[in-house]
Length: 152
Image (cartoon, rainbow, N blue to C red; front, side, top):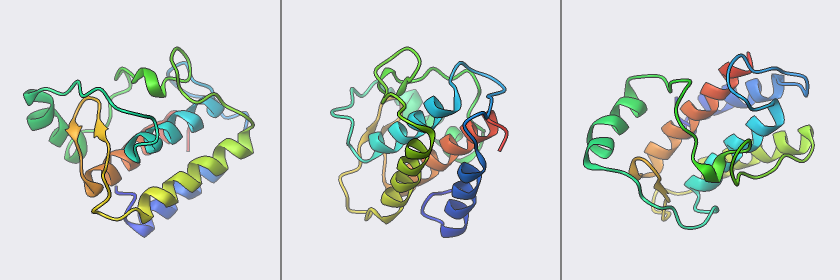
C-alpha cells in the first residue's frame, strides 16, 4: 500500500468513511476519535507539522527494521507510540468531533499524496530520514493497521 497510489488511497479513504462514532477497537486503548487524530498526527509528522523530530533511529532500525516494516511485515499491535502522536497518554492532537476529525484525516491524506518528492520530508523518530515513497508506504500501512483495529 502507498498513499501515492490513487486506487489504494481511495480504498483507505472509503474505509475511513465506513467508520462511525460508535466503532470499537479490537485492541489498544484509543477510541475511534482518538484513532482518527492519531493517524492524522502521523501524517502531520511526515509533513513536518509537529515540530522538530528527535531522531532516535539507529543503524539497526534504519538498515534492517525499516525495510522490514515498509516492505515485508505488518505493523505489530504492540508497537510503542510516539508521545507526539499519543492521544491517550501523550501530547497528541485531542479529538474534537467525529466528522471533523474524519474530514481532517482525509484532507491530510490528500495533502500528503499531493506533496512533491523534492519536499523536505520529516525524519521518522525510529527510522530516520525518509523520502516521499517511504512516507507514502509507512502512512498507508499505519492507517491500514488502525482501520483493522476498528474493524473496517
